[in-house]
Every structure is written in structure tokens, then in C-alpha cells.
Length: 173
Image (cartoon, rainbow, N blue to C red; front, side):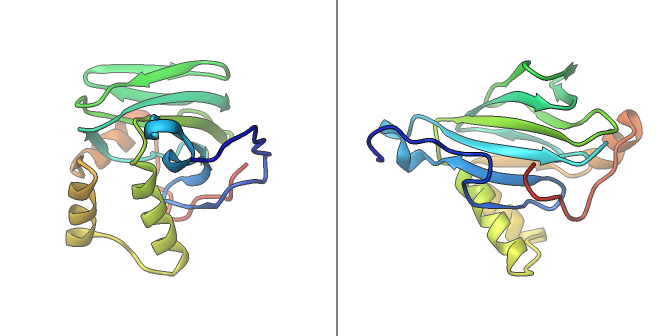
């Protein structure tokens, strides 16, 4: 655990791509007592779907919108949030999120407890190395982190909300 005051500036932290969105690692679970949380930033290109419907079995997520508009589906509920809004995505609930606007968006994602940030790190490093993590390898990685995906939801989500699946995300905003 890191002790003392630390400032994480807008260019600090490892940044990468998760395929459809970006990621910037700001606070890792190892930096926090009892691994209580981790914090990442996700830049989202306009009208980009961040992920298919999925659910976490080990952690809750809190998305704080910095810029732009974030849409989210939580179970049967659909919400849209703007700068200063916080969207709570509890564990064991099917959900997804996307950039609901025509401009880039950025959200802070608080993961509690920590650990799931390592899923993002694994995907980001694989992308940086030119390795596509898909199929059986993605299923194994998801299972390791207590994550379930509904890949069949992608077409429905894109059609319903006017979204695209972006191959490469922009660098962190």
C-alpha cells in the first residue's frame, strides 16, 4: 500500500485500449488499505458501446461522468447521465454502458472492492502487444475475474441506442 499524499495528474497512470474504449489506471487496489477500491478512467469515443451486457459477481462499479453523456442499461432500466452524475452498477446485475452523445466522453470508474482493474490491465497489455483476446481465452479470463458476458446483446444494443463497436479507442482524454 502506498502511504502519504499522492496527486494523480491528468497525464499520470498507465493508459491503454480495451478495444472499444480506453482505460487509464489511476489508483490500483494495491495502493489502498484492504484493497477496498480501484479507480480507472474510461475515455469513450462518440456513440461507442463500451461492452456487451455483462455482470460482475465480486465487485460493484460506480461511474462518475467527467465529460459528455453516458448511457447505461441496468437490468431493464435505461439511464442517461451527464457531467457530475454518478451511476451505481451493483454486482450481480446485468448491465452495460456507452457514450450517449456525439462528442467524446470520459468517466471515472470506481471498482469496489479492487481486483477487477487487473482484468482491464490484462486486456490493455494484450492490445498493446497486438494480441487479440477473444473466444476461449476471453472466456477463461472473464471466469478468472467472476465476469459473465452476453455477446448476443451487442447487435440489439447498437440498434436500439444508435451505437457502434469501435475497434480502437482513443488515448485517455
